[in-house]
Image 1 (cartoon, rainbow, N blue to C red):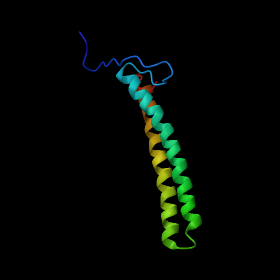
Image 2 (image 1 turned 120 degrees about the vertical axis):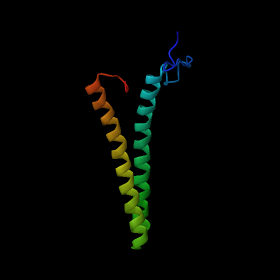
Image 3 (image 1 turned 30 degrees about the vertical axis):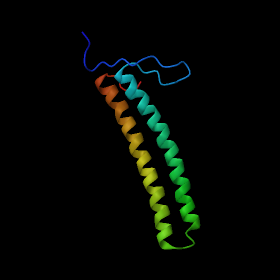
Length: 100
């Protein structure tokens, strides 16, 4: 009898790195890719915020937009990393394996 929480996915081609076959492995892969994408987004927003600051020409609105963009990028990245570390702590406390 198959449990409803158990999900078996088909086998993927060998050159594809996403080889999860259970729901837990799918969540693990998504978390790993989300952290990488968050890092790339952080870099992009830092560059965009710096560009806003450089091209503001002393305009207070441009300076505020650039600083806000940089601040929000850093805060968002900290939130994502905090969620990852909270998940790691929960794994240690409860003895479960969610993220690899």
